[in-house]
Image 1 (cartoon, rainbow, N blue to C red):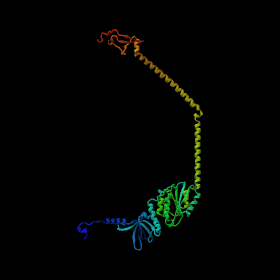
Image 2 (cartoon, rainbow, N blue to C red):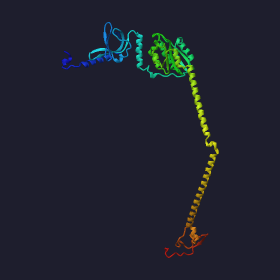
Image 3 (cartoon, helix red, strand yellow):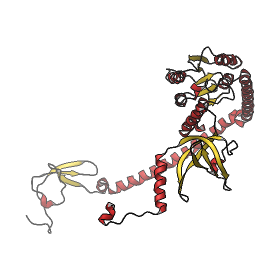
Image 4 (cartoon, rainbow, N blue to C red):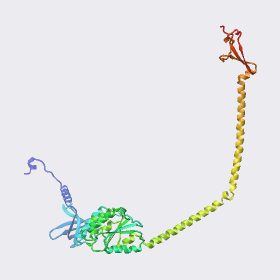
Length: 415
């Protein structure tokens, strides 16, 4: 009896679907994506476009499924009895409760371990975006310095330099010698790319090139270290590896892929004839522009020369002189009016002052009496004492006297 049963606890009960889902999760997480090789058997094509078959060897077989999106990419006839390479992952088909291999890529067998590894590396680097078109940079139209990474004794550099003779070559060609095949060649190429990108004065572009050869001969240009070095370059890279039919990972990572070393020379430098033709075209356009501007300037000059200011130059001076005369007359009249108004105001003010002036009162026979010592104005005899000195101001002149007696009026206050 189990512990659960002896303890009286109810055992956990799962549905078949739940248990199958648990198995599926364990299988899919436990087994990574793998490559399998085997013979196709029990091939069946569904109307949905999916393909079902089993892959087998002498001791075992494995159910496989190719979904319609993957099946559409198969480029060879798939049939029972052929050997294939399958890349995919393990999964579980819940309705039947059996595991199956979901094929993500299908190739005919016999391509060799080197090509299989190359395909795997290509897929890996492509996922990282190292071959993406948006990373590609344009080459400068007239580079001043070109670094060529290649074998100095190979045919590639000879073809490259020979092709430059027909180009508009104003650039300095710097050859960076490396081995282009054999053990360690990929490291030399990657180090050369790194070195060139750290020159004190960077070149305008880099050409990585070698002649044709077998897949093994071109192996250095299909390595991860070279692809990453090309992708990391601060300078645009032209890859010219092998013949036209050869496509290496270096070609895919480069900013420009040239079919041959000769094609690389044609891509980095323009042809002399093209440059001369372009210069001739620019000269024609420049001549036309200058001619047009001269004609426009002549027309404008002729138009201006017909203006009245040039035909009758004194007219404006006479008009200006007449305006000055008019302004002078207006100013003189304004000044006269201002002076007349000012004179009238002055006369009116004088008459008013004259009317309120004490001198006008004095001229009518009145006088002003003040204390000769203090200068105080005297208005009443009651304020006088005998012997006080007085100053009397007349309309014409003044006199000093002394008080003998005073005769206050009857209504004056008594002392």
